[in-house]
Amino acid sequence: MKNEKVSLITKPNTTLANKTGAWRTAKPMTDLLTCIGCSLCAKICPEGCIVMGEISESAANGKKLKPKNKKLKPKTDYNYCKGCGLCTHECLVKAIKMIKDY
Amino acid sequence: MKNSNENKFLSPGHNACAGCGQLSAAQAVMRGLNENIIIANATGCLEVTTTAYPQSAWGLPWIHSLFENAAAVASGILASLKQKGDKKTKVVVQAGDGGTFDIGLGLISGMWERGENILYICYDTEAYSNTGIQASGSTPYGASTTTTPDGSASIGSTQGKKDMLAIALAHGVKYVAQTTTGFPDDITNKVKKALSVEGPSYIQILCPCIPGWKINNDQAVMMGKSAVQTALYPLLEYSDGQLISSSLKKGFQARPAGEYLKNQGRFKHLKDKDISLIEKLAQANIDKYKI
Ligand SMILES: Cc1ncc(C[n+]2csc(CCOP(=O)(O)OP(=O)(O)O)c2C)c(N)n1
Ligand code: SF4
Ligand code: SF4
Image: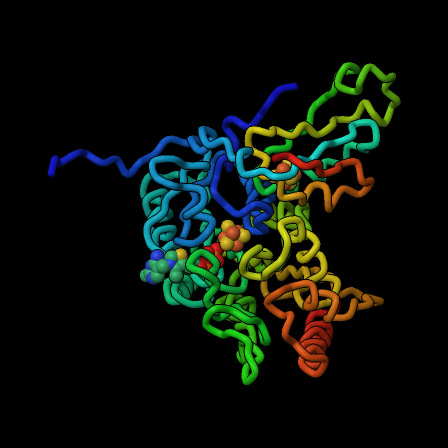
């Protein structure tokens, strides 16, 4: 057997190579106009794949943004979302719906 | 929109079950940490699912050695930081309930006995989740696990949960807190508070486990909340041995324990008389931790 050198030190954040979105059978869809920007979904997601950020008018389907819409809003990274449904289940204003994704 | 997934303390792409209550809690813990942290992690789901070789989800210095020795590894790191004159870096341990209540307990006791400035975080799934849900010293009365299965002559675990907070307090641990996956901001705040304490601190987080508790993928946060609302797992905080905050405040009205138990497969077999026994445990918590 070849005596290969094995490093016990690995590089940080390298799991980003795993697109766990492939696990998903249902997809959370967030209605950004219903969303009040509380960031609860981003806080509880076990993947940490929801990031709060500004949305553009185009992201709101071209509709005019009210003041409540100008808060930071969640963006789900579907490369990693496993479709667990936690965000949908916990959303206080029911802004997130699960849709079939297989 | 900027995607800030890169350089996070805990990245996506890990292998935890969809909806894992432990990883949800770990995200809240990470928001309480900062760059000046070294983590020693015991064996368990948090370690296994985040570090499938040669990858790592971690964005902080992070070390895993064995199941039982995370506290001793942390003590060693602290000793070397002291030797180098580094006063800024704080050492944090992360472990499951098996690693904490059972196999790691002796080394944790030593770490606390020496009064070391280390934050110990126990992710309490109330069983050895990673090896297939064997009962641990943290498994509550009546829970069905693979080593305490329910059946015609068995109600599941006949042992109560070990009082790990009391063990920490008996060692004079300066900051001792309990919280659950149902309260992400409470987790983050307690972590920040613990980091500001000079000396040992212990935080125990109830983490609903999907296959272990036999719950749906979207129920971990709800179960974490329900555990608090039923007084079975109150939010608690001790500073220098004094209870300084508790979810069991004056006027607290406990929800019926059955609400929490009946939604979990591990308790599904319980009869009304078993549930009323567990109701008594909730009342004992109210008596003990009311503030
Ligand atoms: C000395 C030793 N015994 C047993 C194991 C096998 N083992 C790996 S993870 C694990 C369970 C960990 O349970 P817990 O600490 O509760 O963490 P959880 O997986 O529930 O997060 C066990 C028994 C081991 N790695 N080392
Ligand atoms: S469905 Fe689950 S994994 Fe996907 S974004 Fe929501 S909480 Fe995260
Ligand atoms: S077995 Fe439980 S603790 Fe382990 S990854 Fe799955 S849900 Fe999380």
